[in-house]
Amino acid sequence: MNRLSVTILSITMCLGACAPKHSDYSHFETLSDQGWAYGDTVTFTPAKIEHEGLRRLAVAVRHNNDYEYSNLWLEITLSDSLTVRRDTVNIILADRFGRWKGSGIGPSIQTQATVSPDMNITGESQVAVRHVMRVDTLRGIDQIGITVDNPDNN
Image 1 (spheres, rainbow, N blue to C red):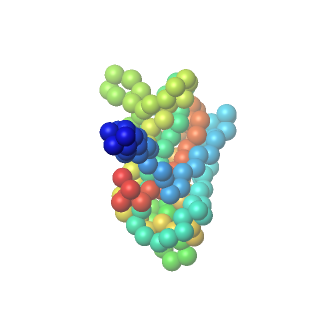
Image 2 (image 1 turned 120 degrees about the vertical axis):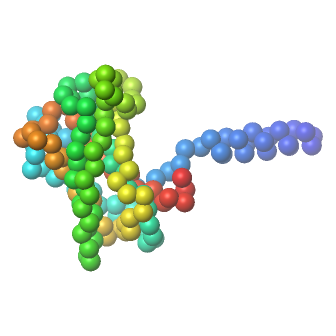
Image 3 (image 1 turned 180 degrees about the horizontal axis):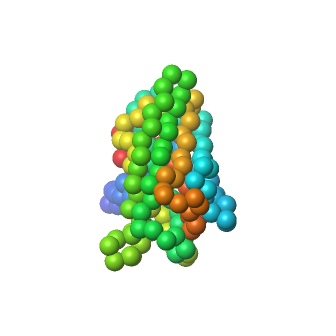
């Protein structure tokens, strides 16, 4: 009986260690089939975040094979009632041979990049994302999203 208890406890601990980490906030917005226009900004409000503190902000893009470029330049604006912080992120989507770097099953490929490992994000914050590529309309981008994590959970 003692061996059985130890075995069950060991298996439970291993499964718990393999469980995926959950984000404080994660959300994706689907973009138009006609493309993502240069002036279109996608805004996220991570209202589910209850406690103040430093968090890791990441942006993710889901694209398909119609995307013509190997990278994607994004402007990320984090604002709250007191401050505005703006960063530019270059997400590398393909290697130098044109092979997609992200992961996914089917026609959509997802790639994620950290914007900042330590931003003060609260439920009052807004995160705005827009592309700053040198074209009027990007085709092949299916969805854009953000993930907010507590860095202590990673």
